Image (cartoon, rainbow, N blue to C red; front, top):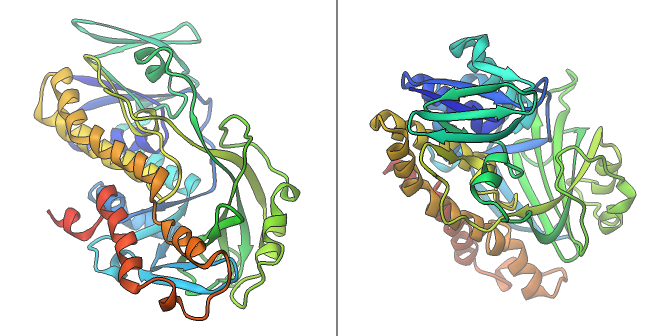
Length: 405
């Protein structure tokens, strides 16, 4: 049995490693002629690092990532709302990593080439369509070539060719009403030097800031990943690589000068600024049709709140590899995989729309009328704050009880 994987992003590469670990042959087909770093920072929560650790990648990731120790929530006046430990500091058996997406992809790619061999990954192979019959699946590429295997998995992202063929007429991504600008800035460590910080709220401007590389210059500076999010009626098509203009959004943050960070100075010092909208798609009624299924953003694209998009793809890969190892028939394995993952990921998609972890910021914004507070305890209790955070962890599947089950 050989599995054809369409897309060599985080989900596709992780799936290839998970299949190889179980002795299942696979080939990957990537549309790009070469794999380059795409996007900026990403957070790997404990449910994802557990799976990557079982693939033997924890040490390699620790070398290129920042081991995140705490989450901090502030209002737009720089006042601390809530702080909680993360990863092993919170009692998990696995760390939480903040990492450049390109560094994560590089770790996965190196492992794929080492363990599966150079011929397992074919670059410059843009899938145009698939056909399946009783003997398997054939992929057709836009260069006129084809490949045949026992089954195919679409790991080709939110604009998935396989998803479009399985669900014709579905339509494009659903815009959340929030536009996002992302950048990376070389900066001295802020707060603990291993903090994931969220501040403000979407109506007036929200920031997410965390370091993704340590000591980048031999003088202790880090590479800070930051995300500016603002409610915006219009947006351009989803694209990881669209350059942005700082002047389009910095006005919302001009007075964000705190004793722990000068936010406008950090934005203006950025090496790179990209723009794209916060979009997702409505959950599908099914992913699998015979010997073809979907994984990651191709199956369940979600609004990037809660650090969960890549993590859910990594968990998908484990579930799909387990199903294929247990079932010789790919169609039966895909049905079992979907039964395990489709409703679970649909819940995360919907939760990211309504009550992700930064719902803490929304609660304080609404209760204070967007004004400074004298004492956070007069606004919201510690139990309420903890409940908002733990509720999201349970839905996303990375609370400690779920991971130890």
